[in-house]
Image 1: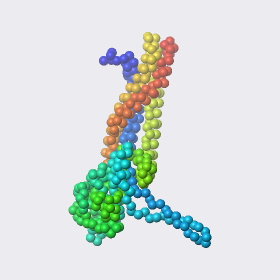
Image 2 (image 1 turned 30 degrees about the horizontal axis):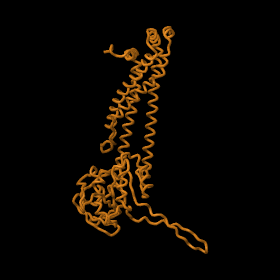
Image 3 (image 1 turned 180 degrees about the vertical axis):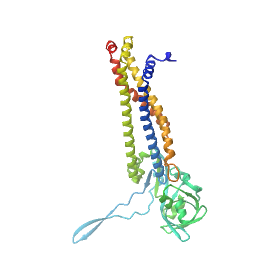
Image 4 (image 1 turned 60 degrees about the vertical axis):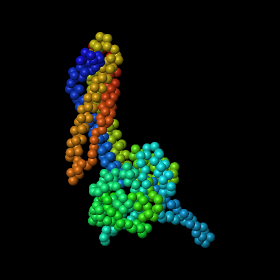
Length: 408
């Protein structure tokens, strides 16, 4: 098999085999570096995915609302001195003007997946003598469930609503002492009151949301909160969640309505994500540089050790380009083998970490998986890094004159 390999491949593998200890050490160094990069990337991706799933469990990526009512100036005449005073008006419950057209317009924007109208207001839920303050949210299930996976959060019951059905959170169910099929009276600020049948109980992973959020049909909530055929907000989801703020600013400028993204409403959390990404990038960079310098230093030593062999090869007719490719191939082989071993080691570390990193109830902290694309990309980058690391020693070897190299 070896006789069918190119000249450079045969010599590259032979040189690596002769300095087996050096080869094993540098492959081990590359493996450790690659395993750190792959493990950290998988861990950070899993952590961010877990955080985002918790955020989007109860909210959309972009929320459109009616614009705030602006302050109106009041003028007072005090002893011939005119004073202008601005009084902030109270924000009344209002509908988005021509919300059907706005929803259709936003739906056609690039990157937007789903838009879902909602009519929501504060209300009271009553069961016997117990009253609880809630948020009554009227939704269109077919559209809303594509934004918030409420069916996947159900503990009991069904997510599909009829006119007099309601979905409540686990904590509200405990506070009111109700379960599937029980009746619940809901009273809004307009004085409207209606008895609902509990169709499903959900757990959004947030005690406040489980205690406050309730969902009914959109056309059921509209008359109860005093908005006939109106909506208080439009939820929007998109392909790239990190472009939500750009989309919100564009919609606000284009339509004049209020648009807030999850990035703005969760500014502290987004700062944490950005810091994590910067830290992970810095770790990758420094680990990659250490791998490159390690490969380069070993190959420089190899050039010195093999200078006599290089001189003989040159005297026998080997070209400078062949000598150059000889050492570049060594760097590529070391980088590629190190990446494969390192990726396998990263799988082992991740399995070990997930087996022991658990919550007090025994469930995993979050799910982290190594993406196959990440392994392929890391192998390509490690191989390319090996070639770059070998560039300096390879060019030095190619410049050796045969007579000088043989004499040592």
